[in-house]
Image 1 (cartoon, helix red, strand yellow):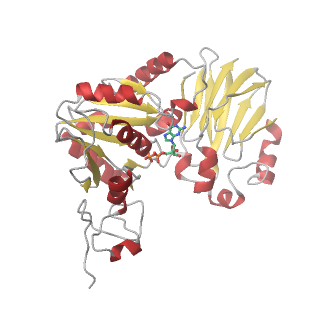
Image 2: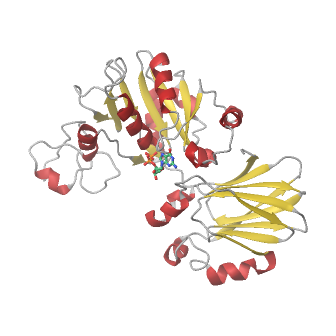
Image 3: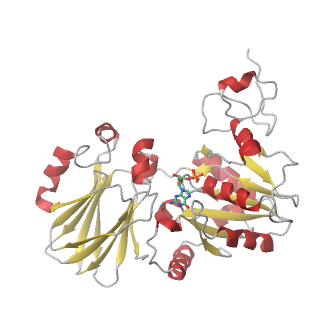
Length: 370
Ligand code: GDP
């Protein structure tokens, strides 16, 4: 029988098969005298947290365990996919612990958007979903926007509590933590990271020690299978996840027209009406406009070729399209959100809008965000 080995940093059982799971160590590093898992290695040497994933049950168990502690919780959501990344049940799990909402990727929004308005919208939206965070922050972990405000807030409010950071996969949780680490290292006397204690993974979480004796705790990201980003190959994921300020694409549709977002989504205006469709999605996804009567044929002929992403190979793996039908009343501008991909803002005359996406992908209506 082979001997079970443990990470000297965090105590996790070492394994060499799955880099996204706890205790991963590259096979070559197993030969070293002091064995530490890749996560501990990266945190210790590069101050860098690498993402960790787990399934829903395990994740909920971790959230529950927060409820038994006296801590402060930071929930991160992806502003470009709020609906797909908001953990609506959070208060049920974390008990009485206070939490803030950090909405990441504000850099993707057009410069002209009013941050106060977005914050206001977000507050209303999360309240409607039963969430009452102490504060809401709009940040960009990547472009270093708004993070100092979060740090100052935590310094002021967290007291002697550990800080748990929770969020779905791909919201930018690792980027956020890494950025926080690099900002506070050495600069904030009472609220800096210390290297005197070893970071560790206990209960499948990673503890990053602060100088005041408390920890910032990185929890694994929960996977939401209703998002596109969980379905496609890493290469196409690069095209799907916007990485630059999104340029809204405006279409004035004059009746019975279809917009294809690559081959990932089909948006039909049903009936002889006039409407504006403003598309917010990654700039790299091409939009094709066509008459609705031709849309079936075009999809069948050109999926994976003219209509890309997905690639032909991915197209074969995607589930068949299903239709989601919405009635637009013509009163207030609405967004139709396609989880993990973006949204289309609709205004104009009352009309019916049919959205076709691969089965399992979440689609829904909300009050317009922008
Ligand atoms: P995690 O799975 O939540 O830990 O997310 P990561 O930190 O690995 O980030 C997921 C993806 O989002 C990566 O492609 C990042 O480059 C991107 N990302 C993270 N933060 C930001 C941000 O502030 N703005 C933008 N545009 N992209 C971000």
